[in-house]
Image 1 (tube, rainbow, N blue to C red):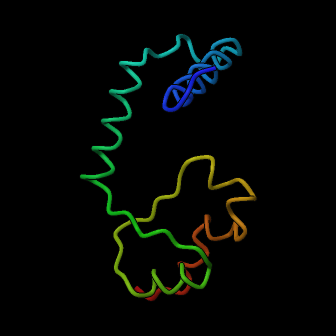
Image 2 (image 1 turned 180 degrees about the horizontal axis):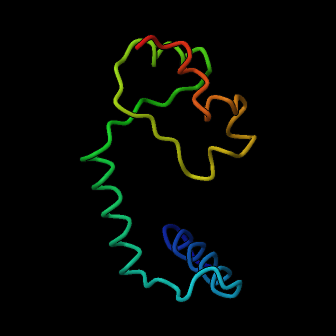
Length: 102
């Protein structure tokens, strides 16, 4: 069994293998390509997106967004839709925007 950081690569390979077998992808990306994608994504996030701090409650969320000015709101990744990660699912539908005066 792989150790350390190899476990992450192993898991990614297994996930891609399953996707390949299910017909969801046409080829398994090489580790070089995966590394390129991860670096480009990190660069994009670091240089193009202003990220909020981690917010732990609905009250914190409402207070944070009342106190700032925003051009856009983005929500993504399937993890945010999982009930265990989103006790206030309506927040991911931007229900707190009603509290903000433009």
